[in-house]
Structures are given as C-alpha cells and as structure tokens.
Image (cartoon, rainbow, N blue to C red; front, side, top):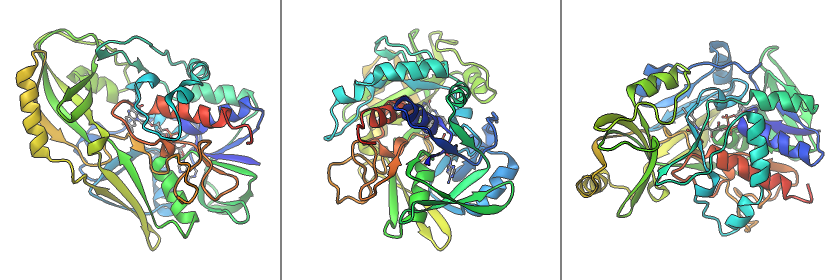
Length: 410
Ligand SMILES: Cc1cc2nc3c(=O)[nH]c(=O)nc-3n(C[C@H](O)[C@H](O)[C@H](O)COP(=O)(O)OP(=O)(O)OC[C@H]3O[C@@H](n4cnc5c(N)ncnc54)[C@H](O)[C@@H]3O)c2cc1C
C-alpha cells in the first residue's frame, strides 16, 4: 500500500503525480472533509507568539493532546482541516519562472521541464496561471482550495482516509502508527512506499518522532515585516519587488478593504483600489540571506519550536537602507516598518533539502527519497533548497511533480 500523509496542496499533488505514472495511493489526514474556516483577524495580527491552529475546536483539542508543543520566539499558522492551509489563504500563488532555486544538484531547466504538467494541475484546481512580466509582478492570484483536485482524484479511485493522525513511522518494519481521532483508538498500517506531505512543520515533527537519530531540524523562512507604504503613482499590480544595496524584498500591498476581504473570504482583486497618493499596508518578505530559522526538537513528549534570529541581519542597518531607498525613488515611500516574529511569513521549509551527499541524514535525493531509507519520500516544501521571497506554493507543487514524474525507478 502506498500512503501519502497530508491532504493539502502537497499531498494531493503527490497523489496526482503518482496516479499519472500508474500508482494508486491512499491519502491519510486528520480532517474529516474540506471545511473552510476563517482565522480570527484579531488573533492572527495580535498574537505575538505561538502556533495558531485553524481547526474546529474538537480537532484542535485532539491534535494538541497528540502533538504537544511549546513555542519560543516564533509564530506560525497550521491547519489540520482536510485541505490543510489551502482552506485559509487566498492571496497569490506566484510564478515559477521567478522563483530563485539555488540548487547545485538540479538545473533550472530541469525544474521547468514539467511546467506543462503544472499547468494541467492548475487547470484542475481552477487556478488561472499568468505569464506576463512587468516590473510590478503579475502573479497568478487565487482563493481556491484543493476541493476540485480532490473530486478529480476520487474519480481516479484515489482513497482518502480521514480522522487519522500519524504519530510515528516504524521504518524498520514499514508500519505507520496511527491514531483514530473519532474512535480514540490506535491502528497499525503497513506500507510499501510512504510520502510525507504534512507541510514542513508537521513533517519535521513526524521525522523527529520516528527517527531517534534525528535530534533537531531547522526550517528556513523569509524574514517577514509589515510596512506602511505610500504610493505616488498608479501601480500595475499590488505585487512588486524592490532592491536596495544588499537588500531585496517582495511586497504585497493591501488596502484596508483588501485586508477585510482576505479574512472574510471575499475575492481580492489584483488592482483593487489603486489610486495615487494612497497609503497601503505592505506584507513584505526579505531575501533569504537574512532569513530566520525555526529549530524543531523534542524534550520528553513535547516538541519545542524555537525561532532563531539571523545574526547577519541588523534592523538598524536595514531601516537606514530603507530611508535611503525612500530618498532615491519617487514612486514608493516606506513610512513605517513592523518586524514580525520568525515563522509569521508562513513561507516555510527547506529543512530537508535535495543533495547528492548521501551521508547527510536530513537530505533527500533529487526524487525526494530520504537518505538511507528505501521507501520514504518527502513531498512538500521541506525539500526546497531555499525559501525565496516570492510565494512558495506554486513552486513547491512544480517541484513535487518533477520529483515524481522524473523518477523512473519509483
Ligand atoms: C495565512 C497564510 C497565507 C499564505 N499565503 C501564501 C501565498 O500568498 N502564496 C503562497 O504561495 N503560499 C502562501 N501560504 C503558504 C501555503 O498555504 C502553503 O505553502 C501550502 O498550503 C502548504 O501546503 P501543504 O500541503 O504542504 O501543507 P498543509 O496545507 O499544511 O497541509 C498539511 C496536511 O497534512 C496533514 N497532517 C499534518 N500532520 C499530520 C499527521 N501527523 N498525520 C496525518 N496528517 C497530517 C494536515 O492535516 C494537512 O492535511 C500561506 C499560508 C498561510 C497560513
């Protein structure tokens, strides 16, 4: 039996790709059925530290018992509802050509080889892909979750098993140790191949639970900040990238109306409300040289998730550079910057990257196979080699398609 753990974008894309090469799979996740649930805007913006769970209260209670966590100096959002985070976020999904994938193992040409397959997948997801290039980014925008893809996969006889939370992997005997959330019972599921698509945080926890030899995992993210931005001319798009000196950041602009729309699930249009001389809230992602990290490790039965600052990054120096940037350009004035906690960008991963060095315990080969394991694959943003400033999801999906469709030995 081939199991995929996780029913978010990554898990369903994995099932889609495996189905393409003739392999039938079963997807396991704790959520019952795709249910959209809004995060509380107050909780999201004002919560300074900790894990924000976007589940039903019942599911959160159960998961908290099975998966105890202590958070230090970081903030991030997780959802164990069926469909994972795809149910919460709208916003953008980006453009694969623009993602800077710094890998010595895989060439960009190889990465873009499966673009046609990606476009087919996006069509099923009902996501329109834009391909224009402007200084201001013309990203594909979507508020779609994975429900269309799930319907497609059910027709292809992919099995979905809900209410199941995988506690650990007995890799020696190829058995999954699973907790049934509804029945409160334990079960063992033997597997022939296993794909971990739990999202980078939960994938890390599962590996730490399963492999005694793995003591800690570091996740990368982009340093995230909000900015109050005045725009002096009409922009083509609410997404842009800026560069000054050694700093480079991407920015998504939101009017107050946009922000309300985002949290109340109204469709946010690309060019909504873009008049000159207006103030916006910018959601910004700084280049990965200055990224913080999240260290995941265990103490007793608890997972500790600890935000670790990047010592190369000086807020003071950055703000000085922004002041110079403001003087030099006539279009954008950045009036105020609010740095967010590590993790808050929700663009996370690169924790188990692709490598040719088989000795690296926390590495995968170019097909996502975990080093020193026969049949365990990592199939989410954990295996990206870097977390760039542009949105990660579309690039991660493209990478999952590549890893599976190019693997002749699977
Ligand atoms: C507020 C917010 C805004 C975002 N904005 C953007 C954006 O603009 N652009 C962009 O590209 N990306 C954005 N992202 C990131 C994007 O949502 C994620 O990259 C993407 O959804 C990740 O999908 P995934 O399937 O890897 O993980 P998830 O969606 O987290 O899915 C993980 C799945 O695994 C299941 N699971 C976890 N642990 C276990 C276990 N032990 N046993 C069984 N099942 C398990 C979960 O229940 C879930 O089904 C945003 C995220 C957030 C939270």
